[in-house]
Image (cartoon, rainbow, N blue to C red; front, side, top):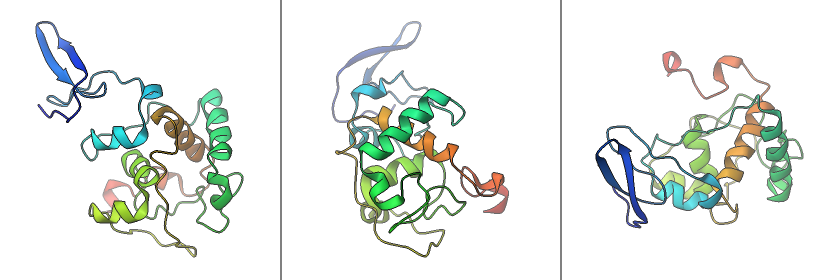
Length: 175
């Protein structure tokens, strides 16, 4: 079992098996405890979650979630660089099929949280190219909860206008 540094309590994974929990998440044989994303900073979730394990709990078809995500895109100043609807500005569009570091939930969440410089230090490389390639600043301590960030990402997915096969990044058979 993988345990983080901050232990907040014990959780029951299944009958008779109790495990230590960090910030609401336990990793044991791919079983994850429920996480209250409204009570955890994106930076803490990234720190305590193994690479590849972050998945958006929301769908881009949930109108209420998408609407909230659009409001968060404005309130956290994402639109200042990426345009009001995510269509681009002085930084890349969020609505096309170019995912600079990859389009899976885990990579996007980490990119917004850590920023592009820290993401590269963790071994991520650019897999796509945009005309605008300024660095993404870290927003992991600015965005007040992981829930807000997941809703922003649901909004971004809802506005996707590229090839449907690439909506969540490069399909495995194309990599």
